[in-house]
Length: 463
Image (cartoon, rainbow, N blue to C red; front, side, top):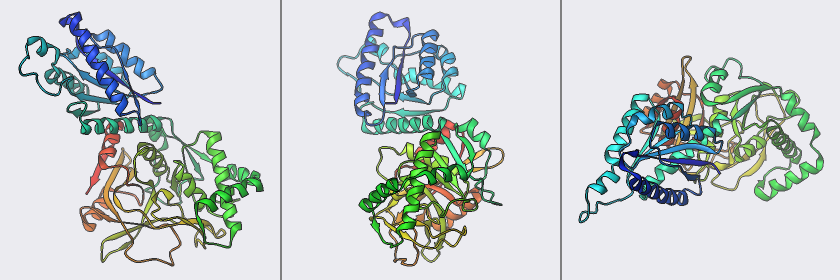
């Protein structure tokens, strides 16, 4: 399991008895937080930092520990901040500054100077906070009694974002083909993406996938078809088309496993050797947490995978989406794509259907169709502004379809923009937001803000 280091600050000025109490209080705190966060991350106690050498040592240990995704720091007593400078300068893991106390209330009847010397977070954390700000250290600051549910929720959020950042640094993205011809917003600087976010984005010929598709056996296809029949309603007599998508899914599973791939793109302009555009197969891959972006949109593909990891363990849906068309009278957005909407958005039992695509010049593809979930959510995209990357996050409300759309054979998601259709759409366009997004009902704008802070990415929030 991934872990957070819990590092407490003090100094040797107060004597051995005070330091023993600091260690004891911190171990109690860590034991409590470890229990509360056990579904997300473990919390590991570390010896108290009392000088520059001990600070450097524990930060170096955090850097070297592959399972450590972040660090929590807290000043139990006053801890002179110069001793933290060199350690903070080498720290490469996300930092959470917890401003708390071992005690929730003051012991009014017994408080004395010994108690005051021991419990000095009120100004110890201010000294520490100053040096973090002076050094430009990006961190999440959580304030309140450590047993308070709001405080625990904020630390859990930090842990989830830290895990997503750790995942991001190791993410490999495969591009089957390149960017859709003449399209601007889906393109980007893949070298800078790797420098900033860790994403290794590389081209693979569609033939690499076709070779695997051809090697899939009939027995494998029959087993996959049985999975489909158990999970979905089959609304087609064209089982040959469904079996073809089964071959694609099996081949994609093999490909991502062999190459350590966590996200991929394809494009309908480059399907040489495939009978269909991967529809059902790509929907299923997203349902397993593999990121996807259409038409070579590697940024959305990678962001899809990272945000899926961030949402792990939360209720809600996260997946690739496209703002497709509007109901201008009511100010509704119909989100869909040609085929590839994640089944995590399904509010009803998905059905497998086969229909013509009308683009790409290939055989009619099988796809999952369903109505979408309801609830508050966000739509997020990443754009390359030439000088920097920009994250754009719109607050939305997913809604039920006001009327059936029986002739639209794709998964359908509808939402309202916040604060209004006019302001939301204008803000998105003015910010340079793309038509491909990652929509999530599991994450919030605050999650995206924390990711943006730790990656030093410009963020615009709409709504």
